[in-house]
Image (cartoon, rainbow, N blue to C red; front, side, top):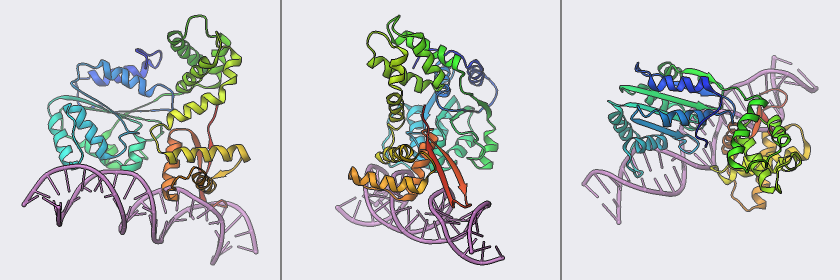
Length: 328
DNA sequence: CATCCACCGGAAATGTTGGGAC
DNA sequence: GTCCCAACATTTCCGGTGGATG
């Protein structure tokens, strides 16, 4: 994670305003595709906001239920570890107590993963806390928060919304160049190589994985052909990295989608993915989970933007979703 | 107009874990 | 120890969807 950030001045300014504003609560909703700097911008501004006593960063992929998130918030506020076995309402009471008279910023990153599990009860609680000066920053790769939470929650949240658009190729080039200059020996990266990467993907995380993979296999200098050569491997690594915190089932499910995509290329529907997953479980002698559960996991893959899904709510195809893996 | 497709996704049930109270 | 209980991951159950087809 770099120490500073190029671009995205508007968002950075917005965050800063939010943190320095002496007026009452101000909540933010930051959304946009993966690899556009949402997490980085939030992180950097959060670190810097030392006028605020309590600052918590909660990655909701990891803390994906109300209880886990509450526990993490408590841990962050009090700096003491706390075992399981407490009731949500206890934690809530203590959190209210701790934040009563201090300024607090809570960042909930990738909040869609929490909302999918628990609905918005955590958000409802957080927006209703009667505390002094309390900021909630919600970060998501999903478009609309309004659709994902109940009205009563949204109305007490009243967030300012901001969307990060994908970088242009030129911006991606500049950002990757700056990072490459720190990571690689000088004169070891061909302009054409970097240009190729930046023109093929504007997701910075993918770009970094790609450059890194190329650099590891390159001889003295990373050339355009080096880069082209590792394209698939680089994307596979990126996907692997995205799935790190998820279960073996997620990985097999993703593998199923990719295999089907290679084999037949078109019209992959959820049912086919599920049966391919079953076959893969046989091969690796893994236990299977139910279709209902897989449907949930498939949604995770969609949130990670490793697959794209198109939903058919009925029609000649029946009620299902059509799925395809994203790639470079 | 009835029926079918094929699975979505909400709701409730199940089984497990790790506390606290006695 | 034993009983009770909340939280959780997962399963079970099933109503619902809208164009195509006869």
